[in-house]
Image (cartoon, rainbow, N blue to C red):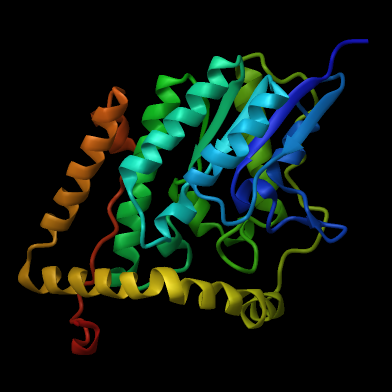
Amino acid sequence: MSRAVRFVALGDSLSEGVGDPVAGRPRGWAALLADGLAAGPVEFRNLAVSGARARDVDERQLPQALAYRPELASVVVGVNDTLRRTFDIADVAARLDHVLARLAGGGAVLLTACLPDPGRMLALPAPLARPLARRQRAVNAVVHALSAHHDAVHLHLADAVWVVDRDLWSADRLHPGERGHRVIAAEFHALLVRRGLAHGAPPGREPEQPAPTRADTLRWLATAGTGWVARRCHDLLPQLLRLAGSEVAHWARGTSARLDAHAERALDVALADLSVPPPSVRQMAMPQVPLPREPVPRAVVP
């Protein structure tokens, strides 16, 4: 009997499987993908934890993953970093580079993905959405550069289709629903097949459970959504309001380009410290989110 293929998933709630519950527990794209990796046995371990940041993956999940000695390892993280007042693109880049280098050095094939920014997913007004978009663009640029540097199997989830197709998303509008998880699994499977790294049946793309209804969305907002907002009020919200005030002030003066330039300089420094080729990969990952053209209420300005 052939030895089982070992696959480990590192990351946050996306890889944990939030949005795709089965028998009361999250399943998710990684588990669906594991079923199609080989015709023989596959050992799958999911180390992803909801709320994880790059630091958590580096300090907590990586040691467990290395001890597992996987042939395949997925690392998808970064959105939670953008939702914290302590966001530091240089720290995110350094930690992701360390994680990917250690896993690749242990012989694992890497799976990575760039992600849509949460401001677009939640349809926030531009003064609130643009700071988050700027951060997610930076994270995506780092992921693009590191994926190329470490020869990872990379999936583009920041494309517009992933934002506009609401059938892919769960009631919270931040995590894929079952259909979304299945599509992610199927897309990763197709990329692995092209490299000759997947030999099992591809995951089905059609969901087996009904899509979330408007009542599901309202229920989430009244329960889990309320808790999510309350937690962010103590962390992200005060800073996000300051960032939004700065966005509006610069927009009113016609100097918004300064904020973009500052973010670009920080990204250049982060990528230079990693010694990976930044410019062409960065441009692939950084679409702009336009500022509002209509007058902005004075109350928003601090």
